[in-house]
Length: 525
Ligand SMILES: *[C@@H]1O[C@H](CO)[C@@H](O)[C@H](O)[C@H]1NC(C)=O
Ligand SMILES: *[C@@H]1O[C@H](CO)[C@@H](O)[C@H](O)[C@H]1NC(C)=O
Ligand SMILES: *[C@@H]1O[C@H](CO)[C@@H](O)[C@H](O)[C@H]1NC(C)=O
Ligand SMILES: *[C@@H]1O[C@H](CO)[C@@H](O)[C@H](O)[C@H]1NC(C)=O
Image 1 (cartoon, rainbow, N blue to C red):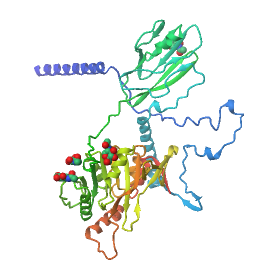
Image 2: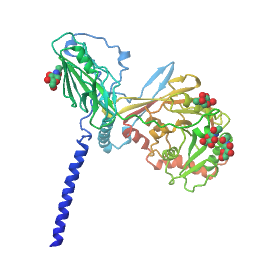
Image 3: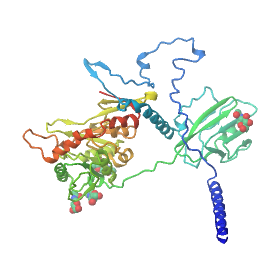
Image 4: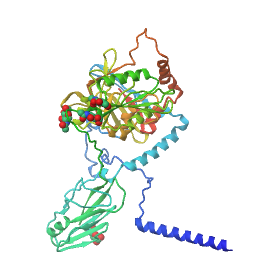
């Protein structure tokens, strides 16, 4: 009996506590914000609406399409067909990879639907009302800020630039309406009637336009719904006229600065870490390290190592990180990069060799003096031919089926003050970069055997990339004379990198391009 009673009390107390906590939490937070994904898709390309099929009032006006310009307008129909064109007397061919075809016919439809859902979620995370097109209507007497108004989450600002430029009338009235915050006034001006202080709808009226305009200078906006990195669209109204503008809501971007003293020129050991990944090529790696030590005795070298039978690399300023066997190329790059503590990192392959013209100071100098995030060098083969691998990437919208990735050899422009340097989107495997930017983009660890361009595609829009032809490094691997015998490990390396790759999903890269990056095809020239 007694036990039952105690149990009853316990249950009652628990219930009461639950109710109390629930109510308390609600009081504490005050409100509930729906941040679930919505199902409707976000409309796009409003700009061209009514361009080729105009409204009734313009329907009788004829126009002549200027193809050369009209064709340059991006529409949602990038093409994946092969195309040959004559350019300066040479035939230029594009190669095209249709990505959808890497999936079986049976799974294609299902994959497409899943990709669409993930894409809509991505758009909703990325887009804010501040990205929308707002049109200022003709002859509005309303003056307001076009862009650049920003508030920290849950904070208050004065809204700059509000006023009414109206001719004399009996009563001047303006209204402001917001969705994610409230209005108030920092001061009250005589002769102005204020309604809705502390609410999402503020109404100001006065018989004197000057009084009203003075009052408008004191209008404040307070963000009240916590949903950072979005924007509030404010409606500003007077009789017969309406305008809209956005207030961006976001935290400040927190800087990550490196404290490095510059006494007599750049201290490379303090500014740069050399990162590499090794697999089955310890002889090459040791050659690389001894070549680095000739020129940079104290610079830290980070090695990611996924060998089956790891060998310890001894020496000062060397950090070797062991990974599970065959963990892969991009996974290793990620691990190495994650351990870097300096402002910059230099990526090298384990079969590179430093020479007297491997001048890291030049790379540091351009990174210190320009807005570039990353700068590549030149890899010299034994034939004295050297490669910089400069490419331009672009993405053309392709509607529901996905976008088209275009890859072109070349660069955009030279860099003022650095005569051997240019700007491009993708560069060679030998580069120096801001460490923080590498972390931001990351190396997709799905890419296990070969891969390089994938990183630059993920980094498109995030990285400002340069390439300097006068910073050289030698490439050891390709130095194979017909009479030199291949070592056991060299044979194994070849087998893993080129032969065993076929054991894996050979279409992996294209599957990632299709789903992860939402491309339908890749055209390269
Ligand atoms: C402004 O808001 C008030 C109160 O909500 C309303 O009565 C009035 O009609 C509005 N005026 C305009 C010009 O929208
Ligand atoms: C640091 O040293 C480099 C190379 O000597 C020089 O170009 C640069 O202006 C120096 N920076 C500062 C802040 O002194
Ligand atoms: C260069 O940086 C290293 C590592 O931070 C430091 O030990 C060394 O004293 C620095 N050299 C100079 C000349 O400041
Ligand atoms: C490198 O480090 C050693 C000891 O760690 C030090 O004695 C030497 O001065 C350093 N050299 C340079 C160039 O900083």
